[in-house]
Length: 136
Image 1 (cartoon, one colour):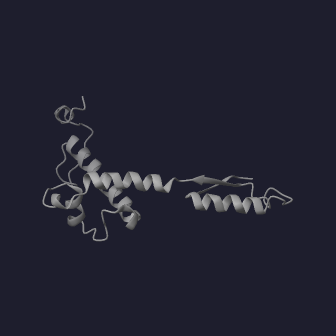
Image 2 (tube, one colour):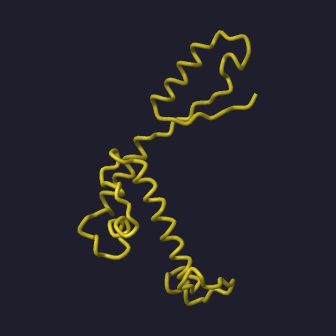
Image 3 (tube, helix red, strand yellow):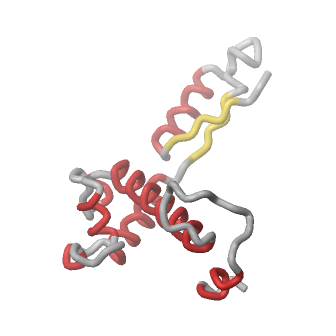
């Protein structure tokens, strides 16, 4: 029998344990739900870390400053995004993933000496690019 991890918050994990206790007298491993393995996700811990990030980096006064989170929110039309994480957890998480991927891609383009997405990528990265960012 394979083990199936079931991810969830504290309440979900508690419900999984309750279900397993209710089926503990089963005759087979399947009836006893032995293949189900609860994995707590620490949802609230993630929410606190996201809230700290938003408190530090998401400021309405930075809207005209290019590259700030508030500016990126406006430029890419993320209207549902609010500063309070628990009011829109999924939007905040998606927005920060989107922004991180964009910033990493932009850094890679700068290191490779590419100015447009349509430019041809070569394996010959200029040494000056690395020195400019303190990479070597």
